[in-house]
Image 1: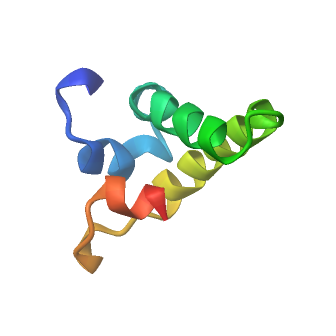
Image 2: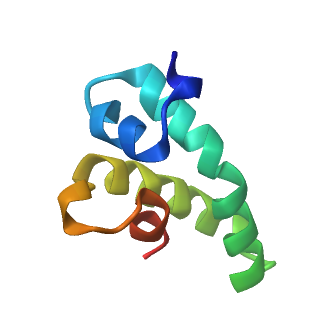
Length: 76
């Protein structure tokens, strides 16, 4: 079910649906990893974890009425 939903739809239900949160994190794992490696090859593991925690926080606070896509919001 979660695989058919858009990022925005997943973010809307991720706070209460573990499967939705897992799918969202799966979709953004590579983004967090790539950004962490680009920032600091030495400490990328710590930065990667911070990136995933940021994705969780973004999913819990995302408001589609503000006009930004979830990808844009999460990347900030």
